[in-house]
Image: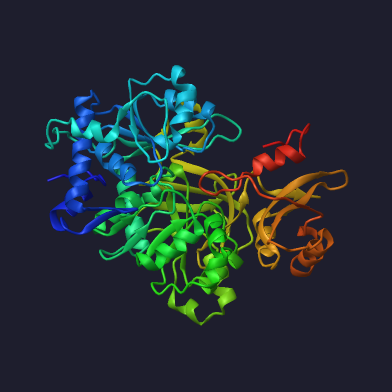
Length: 529
């Protein structure tokens, strides 16, 4: 009577009960669940006939298109392992990941094919399949995706027995101080995470989900599975384009989306945002880096978004916390509500146990003051880092995964991140949270984006430096910013220096890359990462 927990079974269910329902919209192309299922099955057969068998690894370098969704199901229901690639990384990192992952085949979008062409001679791939894109022409040699599907001899899937503890995907984290690490996520972990996605984000059959979040990032946080499970509709989006997103909200009646705080910032600061009227009041989950309360409030005030804060890591599939909303919060002011939503929150229903502990493993007091590290265990934690026992042992100790995020726990159990361990500023013996300073800066009307890091100081060892991208036309000075911060927080926490820049370095999913900023200011010092 046992059935393995695997998210690929949700495609079978969707095809069975919603065959004529619109499953995927990708530009001017639409597919019903019956059509989507047939294309995914045909991909499985084509892969099988090309020699891909259970346990083999297939790398995929695609944007948020229907081809990417088909790959998730077509590869994984074969019992093979999908390796989603971040198409924005350097060619050298791409070469390392493809070879380290032991991928036998690569499915690549023509827009990104030149990167592969650059490293093609160094790759151990057996076959390349190329998704043709209008307006692009590559010299990379490979088989056309549609022709690859067309040559499949049947739509009948080969019989595969799935073990819920076998790998479903191999997701690589972005390398900062070392090479990217391959996170091994199982069928069970993906299933449980997607169940959390459905339950806590309130996914329903009639939802219209906009894929603003890259699907390669922790499998779209589970959205690639959860939306299919409910028989809801996937709206594909090739790239983040704020004006287009605002149009799609109303045109497609979008009810749900996910994105990092930087995407929210792009949307609320898009001039068109003040002109549109979004009647659907979409729910938006945000994670990736701690969002400032001021940014959450802007998203709700300007766009009418219902913000849901979630927290996790690629190593945890990714969700382990969410800010549960209680009716008692409705009576609080808008500012107080945004402050609560900026907290990472409490455990989700299905993932397992999460807590904040001191270095000795003892849990911190629930007082909102004692600082510790977030650790977790349970159903969504990775199997380990691929071919790296040493880093796996360093991350998973005594059955707990150590996140590296420093946080406090409030009396109601809500956890709030104060910083990454490496981002904490220690000035004259005092701990300063860079995210707390950033939260104050985001309330300044002239600040578009900001990153706060430690910078060397002869007297205090290190002091806070605010690196700021100003709103268009703003002329605020360094002293204006410093005085503003001193008026709104403890003086020792306020930035001692301010630099104004045109842009901030970010990952493909919108996370600030503070290590790159630190390298600029700490060159020649031991603290460079």
